[in-house]
Length: 621
Image (tube, rainbow, N blue to C red; front, side, top):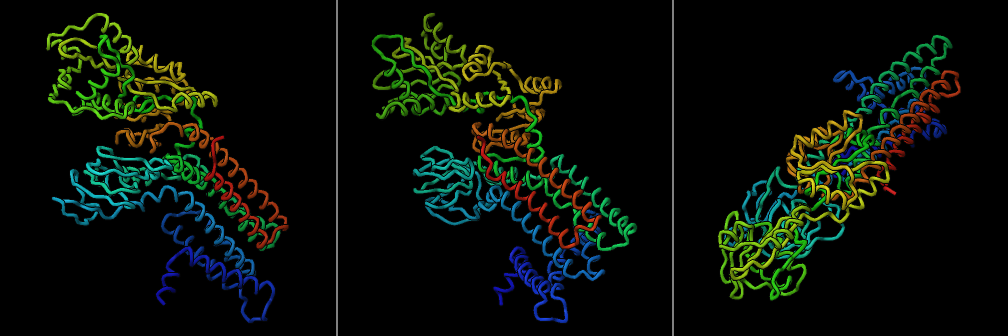
């Protein structure tokens, strides 16, 4: 009994069951099986028709919503009044089937997004003085120590403090392969621990965690915000009025009520209303497969008109992290490799990003372990001083060496200046009180940057660089990736002003950025796209679209998807309008009866849904 109750509580299962019963009852009625006193088509009217009429009445009373359900209800009632019970039953069946198909398609389109909501962990393993306990995930505080076992979903964002593992980050980044993680690596809520057990310190909890931030973006994705949807809705209202007038006029001229009923059946604007929302939601579902969250359906419509894309540099075209690009030694007895080794050992205990970058670069190049410094001192605003293998190492800026009575030669300064012109940061190094050389660090280009700029150029979309770098550094980075148009020394208002200037000339600009300083430009741009993972909350909130994977390689696909979506919508609208006006003419002339009219009408709705559903698997060639 309980299973039966649960079955009927499930709306989709209940609807499918009612459709099966209705189809059987209509078949019995059509074939006159059993010579029953009561027409079995009434079953279809009761099971499928009454819910439609109920929905139409509720819409009229609550919102004065004159849409498809109103027209369908009038057609049903009229069919019953003139004794066309079979036609009324068939209209009820087909309308309900069309609605079920619509819901299934939209649900499938949103499935890729909504799974994020269901991935929110409910519990976490809290560790206090070595004692483990299970607590609700919402009770986790910043700084709490949590333990994550193999196969478990990570509850909040944090930093690994012990253990190593591989994490499935596909829900956040779209990466198909697990990512290896160790001590000091960052992990994100909603991702899955694949193999090892590790302890982590919580850094972002509740609404600030990565998963919750993404859920906020998901919940704001509303296809009905698209301008073209509003247009379709307005057309639908007028079509209902035209259909009613046409039905009354046809009855007045011909005196045949059945023609009027057929007009009401075929002129229901279901296909027109479905044309845009189904396409938009299918496109949003497609975008999530590529690590893209579209906050508003309107953004896809606007993106299809973009002719220029403005890129922020740091964190967008580059990784936003310093890396060693050159090690220059100016003494014969210390090679570049030895200088890197000594400096990396000196920086081993440093918390400074540049020091960590030097250590990381050494570990990537060499398999040997670094020697721990015998002494270490961090000098704020200057650099580090350490003793390694009996050698006193100074690594930092010019001021650090000057304060230790070490003068840097013009030869070294001139060589370092060339790197500075390209936007590099320099760590000057002295060994045992003598100038030795320097290490140049720079933010490295994303590996796909050049390829993406080339692809955008091939589809006639111009790329622009907006950066706070000096003109020489901006020119160097722009030329290296194929951008000819760049703006240097940009403050936030400068980026916004540059975009405004382009758009005043009717050149629609899409801005891609990641930092707080990009927020004004993201808002000003025709379409704003934020790097959702490393980007600031303010930047994400200001944007229309977020790249969850922080990977710009999905941009060409996104542009192609937006253009394909608008093409699909135009085809949907054209198909639905042609079908409606053709069907009404056929109904007026008596060629279509209510039964055939219901079939023709729903054929249009199903065609629109199928055409939109094709966007789910669209790929950029």
